[in-house]
Image (cartoon, rainbow, N blue to C red; front, side, top):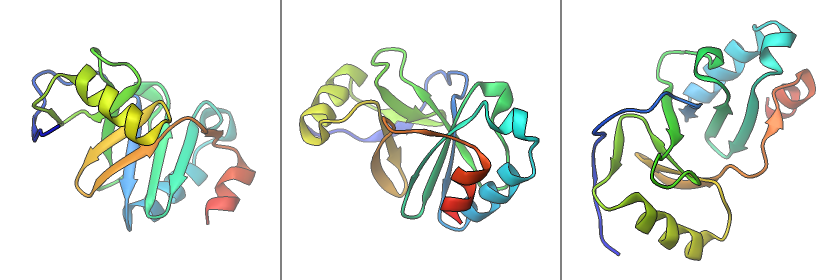
Amino acid sequence: MSWRWQAAVSAPAPRAAVAVGAVTTSLLARLAGLPSAQRETLQLVAAPGWLVVLGAADDLPWVEGVRYAAPSPQAPALWLPTHAEPDLAHDLVDRGLRRQHGRQPLLLWPDPAAALPLDRPQIASDSALQGLR
């Protein structure tokens, strides 16, 4: 299956803030500064060099360098950046990734290229933040 990234035709409302590299430290600090009640409406998925914060659009934190993602309207288990999308039907990309990775939902990211499982989020509690530092 061959495809390329293109600019998103219509950007859905964000449902995740995505930080890569050094931006993860800034995002963790921003999360730590939020009131506990607000922070605990958010969920976290972390991988080496990545931090994904899941939540409602109005609750997602912002820091310099963070990008946003949302589930594809055509394939809800496939999460894509709000600024880019595959030039192939999303359901086809989703089926291919499902065969390859076996986990759902999955965040597909263009740069750096990655496919991150989002199926094991944790509440953005004090203890979760401590574990990520």
